Length: 351
Image (tube, rainbow, N blue to C red; front, side, top):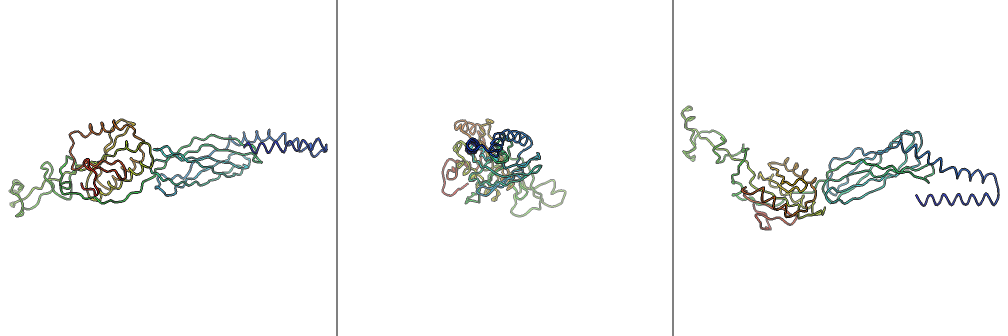
């Protein structure tokens, strides 16, 4: 804007020089128009900016890491005047790391019209991205003077991490680990006498202790009562956000590792619990993962997390929350290459 005003003043000075040197009527008319022009420009911009607004439209609710996310930006000109042009500043902020990138979008609108411009950004980090309109600059007829309209609209886009199944060996101890639970398997029997899995006819390999005597007398045949298999969380995934600090790259790597491991366990029908310390609310968040849908819910919650900087508090809350709890394996995840199983690092994960 400063350069344009300096250029305008130079033209006025040259016109004055022409007027005093040659004393022609054309020079006087031109000089008068140049002097009056800022007044007309001020009135024009004041009227137009009151009737011009910008908004975000057609926003993707979710996107993927390293994949373009497209956002529509609409500018409405409700006045009857044509815009010489406008510039709109849009910014994208990572909700976890705070890293911000911005861009200016330019365009023109006719009187009583609207335009939609498209903005694309690519995020190399996963997490919640905050899209906001910062400034709308409207120019006068000749594009010399400008007036800025502050914007405050904000929208959010969830950027999902990249993840894939990873090699994990699940031992028989974990497969047959009995955990306290309110849900029981519909696919296999277990040893929990409080829940009946099924009633069937007696077979030679069955133990006599499983015979349902009352029902056998009624059916006039030996019947077996199979107990239920509790679907408790046999593996604990402790997600340590305190190790990432406010580093968006490390945060993304941590979420990718959790998503990959959790999805692998879900595919293996291994019910597990994901837990982490939420510094903002001073609590340990726990989520049971019993299938693919639950993994997606977990990812959605993780990418909305804020930095955790209190390492000692995170450790203390972890110990207090799981004191007395038993799991077949406890997996502590600190990052892409920092996974501890029962306190030890393994080349091949064995649970």
